[in-house]
Amino acid sequence: GQQVMQIPQYQHVQEGEDFTTYCNSSTTLSNIQWYKQRPGGHPVFLIQLVKSGEVKKQKRLTFQFGEAKKNSSLHITATQTTDVGTYFCAGPIGWDDKIIFGKGTRLHILP
Amino acid sequence: DGGITQSPKYLFRKEGQNVTLSCEQNLNHDAMYWYRQDPGQGLRLIYYSQIVNDFQKGDIAEGYSVSREKKESFPLTVTSAQKNPTAFYLCASGDPGAGNTIYFGEGSWLTVV
Image (cartoon, rainbow over all chains, first blue to last red; front, side):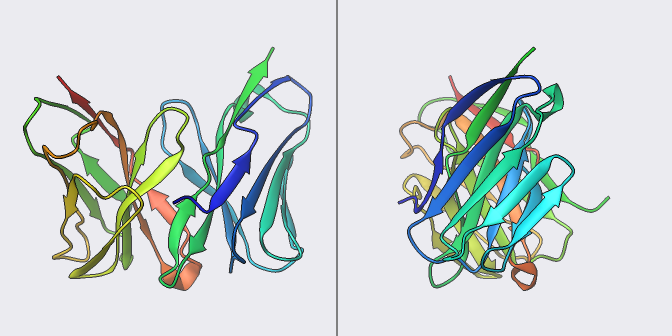
């Protein structure tokens, strides 16, 4: 079954507020990946983190990989309506590194 | 254009029928995946293939079948044994040499009528 857990499942924020989604794996990951799916679209790759404790930024988005390489977070500062969508984390699981996704966090922005 | 092409985008199936969803990639990726997406369920892995002529079951393989005769192609057949096939199906490919980040097609909507 799923071995990548993600919370919260849904998040409603006022435009301009910050948003964070958290991802946890039952096993140590060689890397963690983040994807965004806009309503009606398909998931699009955002970023990959590889190193323990790594932090990467993409404009208002900050991605962190935990020291134990079992958890990660995505933080969006000052949300905008363009941030609406579902954010997924994913990681290579098992002997053959198949990519397993968390259930995603659906972000809804209130104007 | 480079990428992953899924077809058809919309498909209606009568109960008891098998249907095949096409997935083609020209990214020269070794790995290919099929995921199913239902509301609130995220992306669940159906089948995956890391190399031609080899594939493995994912978490929800029952009622589905695949083949990987060519590197570029990974078709998914939804059989009559799949009791609740109405869903959004996503094909993806990945490059293990690049950390196996994956790239998705635009998806196929399957509805049972």
